[in-house]
Length: 300
Image (cartoon, rainbow, N blue to C red; front, side):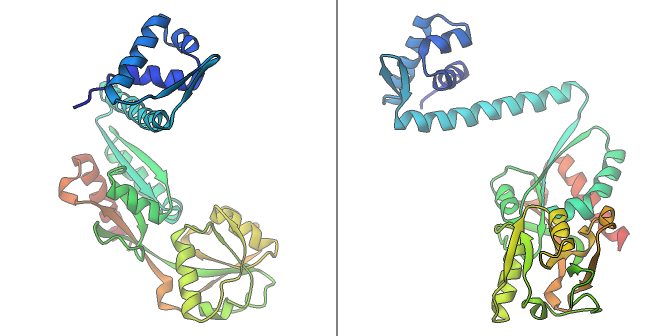
């Protein structure tokens, strides 16, 4: 079994960054001869050449490029490990990683995580915003403890618990021909230009799927990365959009927008908490899941 020491991995990264052994030696405070020997020993260990030696420096071979990619990931994980362990010495007694979609982050998690932190002040929460498909992959690969994503996204290998419910609404400018409607079916809006999210968002995929079922094309005029941007584009007459009702910012009240509930059954949307297995979660993560489920029942 090959054994790599962290000093050599860090040194190889420096050599790749600097492009010269002498510069890497200065950066790592090592003698040039020691750097040259460590790199030669590393190449002997892996059984292939990692660097092309040139008159004015070094270049990575294809094998060197692959080795650099993995070396950076290893060193990054070591730094994260050291940072997390240092938190325990500073009084942080737990750490929970969450990946969540934008809807939950805007509409529900601020209050739910605030009350959780009040009850468990020594547990650190690492929250990252991702699209639902990325969240499912992150949970499956162990990159996050739990994920919060749209219930219609396929995740057959994950254990899922219901978190919150929301409904989708059509958002139009205040003077739009559809603005006077009290409710509307999605296919009735498909004759108009849409403002939407980036293509890999689960909401966007759902809208394309439903447009195909209706036998029409979803006329995407502009795609942006936030619900805020969608609302502002709609305010200026660039099109209409479909948004989760509870994500329409209160602070956007100065915009002339009308929100019209969709009458389609699929517009009633569920957000779920996904995990590989509840029973194998760290205790801190189980505490958070329990809190989120309780928050859902008490808010109903």
